[in-house]
Image 1 (cartoon, rainbow, N blue to C red):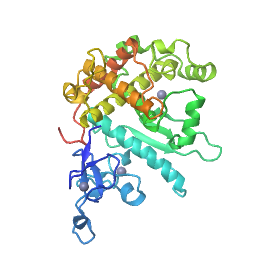
Image 2: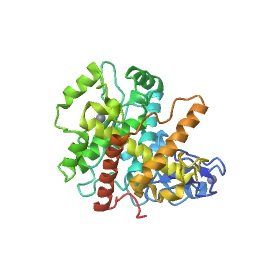
Image 3: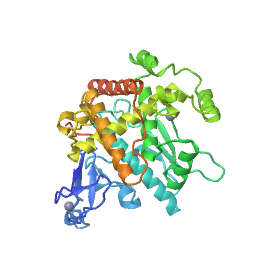
Image 4: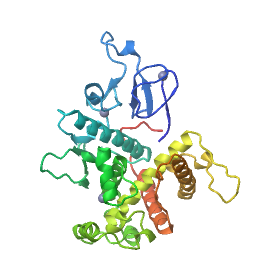
Length: 358
Ligand SMILES: [Zn+2]
Ligand SMILES: [Zn+2]
Ligand SMILES: [Zn+2]
């Protein structure tokens, strides 16, 4: 993700901020102009004929959002919040907290998808088509499975509880488990149906990822019952990716989103790595150009350098590796397929109605 500045005092602010720490003004992210708007308290007051910036209803009433709504838009919710169709009961503060974490991760996903030129809504199919989310907190005796079905991404909100998620991560012996990672993964299933299924790319998909008509339920039963195939590291980004071609695609897709989002941030921060030795990881932000449209080779070599730095810094802080994955040539070929699929979609698609032309 790019970096942001307060539109009033130009101080550096985070995407998640609701207030500028320098000038104190309330902030709202505008998905249309892709900037952080500082709110002038006078122009926004009840005395003003019309608020200068319309804030998302979930910002004002629930405190779980920090986005603005386009002035011409009559939806009370911002572009991200309106994609959520199910939220937890809000009587308990804990539920609101879980919901807030899920929405915060989702907003980052939405901006990442828009930056890649992927339509988040489908204006050709009507307002109800596109990607949607159900954030469900399991009630007594209820099981909520995180997954995707026909454009709806369901997240078990307990995944936003750090203790429970860490327990699951250890139980499944996974090196990485985050709410954002879940949402990125599930969005992969959605875009597979939209961009790969029955497209001219479907055959190439099968050559790389395998035949997705293999029994999905059985594959997952085997994965959770007897564990992943022993040689998974040779051809898959994660053990779970080896369970079924759909999961392989979704895991690879999620990694592509990790990569592009993080590289854009590194570039935006002005990071540059010029090692003492020629053969060591090098990162030159100017070589990347516009990250979301960079050639695949440039992205991947930059990603090697940035993840090397990320992991080295994590170790210095006594933390686990921030990016605990190995990209071998088979996995890189799959990432390239994701890259090409997105590039084709961007070139052939119509611009998203929610974003001004760059
Ligand atoms: Zn400011
Ligand atoms: Zn919102
Ligand atoms: Zn999946």
